[in-house]
Length: 124
Image (cartoon, rainbow, N blue to C red):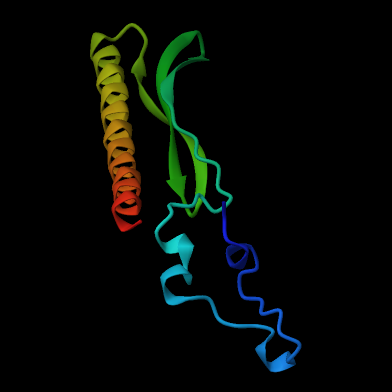
């Protein structure tokens, strides 16, 4: 059960108006610093290939999401003609590199969260 003083955070029920608000205890002052908050942003992850037709020719484009100025944007990059083995190989390398980078980023974030879990278990 949660003690009632945890639910009445910052409020003193005293009739004395000068005591009706108190600052939070130092150990609980800024919970957001230790919890990784998304802060209202939507995270989009992904990449793929797109084929565009121009003047009867087909071209590969590599699309991927990336963060720019606090927003997730979908970018497309020209890779080459569909009938080119070099373009096909380059496209596959770009996709593999994107996934590798995303896996590393997820592993870093997961490790941080697991560290917070471990710290909370040892501190109580």
